[in-house]
Image (cartoon, rainbow, N blue to C red; front, top):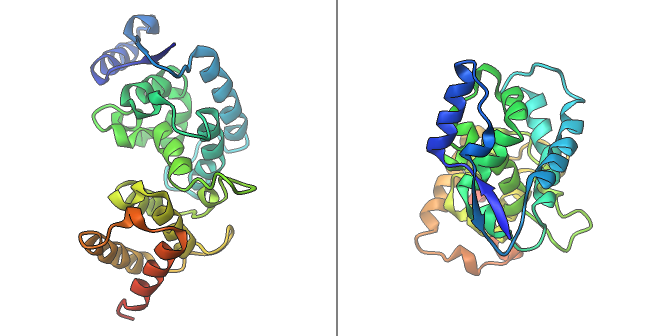
Length: 240
């Protein structure tokens, strides 16, 4: 089995050609890699169709930090994650060049719509793989997945603040452990439609405290209840 990839260098070359008014065949930029898992053109087409059905319910132009952008990310996350497997992550999910291929070959239109004039090459995984927009939506579903729940993506649908997810889940290493990431989302957003529990400066202060604790506490050993207890205790000790 194989899966497609595009390197950052070739992605830049392809995008430069598009900006110059040319439309080269994308196939010449794709490299296929061997894998025990497979994800190909038809899989990507079907996924794009599903995401496009969601996107079509939104305005043609949105502000990058608007409520529409946030709501779209919440709705698209389960579709993207489920299409790439709800069990163990497929091998290609760890390959940044797979995500660059997916972003450019099939989600360039969606990414341009999401960011508008603020679109940067990093949003396509070029130069900053973790900033790839489609990858981030998959990661949102992955880090707080509840495999045995009636709705495995219930926590991924909480939290309208894009800044919360990017600053306090994706960019902080303790989000590598599902129980801790799930506990932090539950703490900050106790209900699906609820407001944030801590305001912006307070959640940042809590995040800094948790990062400091990580040097002495092995978060990977905590279950959901233990992680929740730790977060609650530290939140209570914050200056009022």
